[in-house]
Image 1: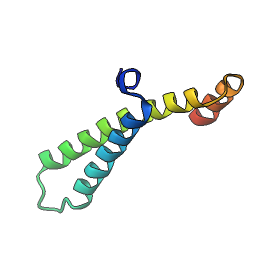
Image 2: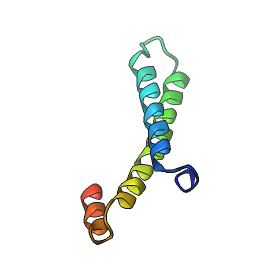
Image 3: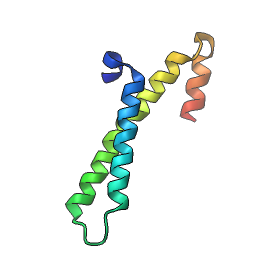
Length: 78
């Protein structure tokens, strides 16, 4: 839905930025961190990945020449 409105690359960048932020939160979460904090960071990580991966697939499909689009999709999904 977002990819159709604003393009794939901004969605990929936002998703990857969310992955980096949540990864840093998880790296710096020590043994004294609450379970809610860790679960929240994990959920943020999943949301970022959920945005980035389909947008990357859409961007790759749009960038491939029509005669090679199926080959590119197969290589990306393998």
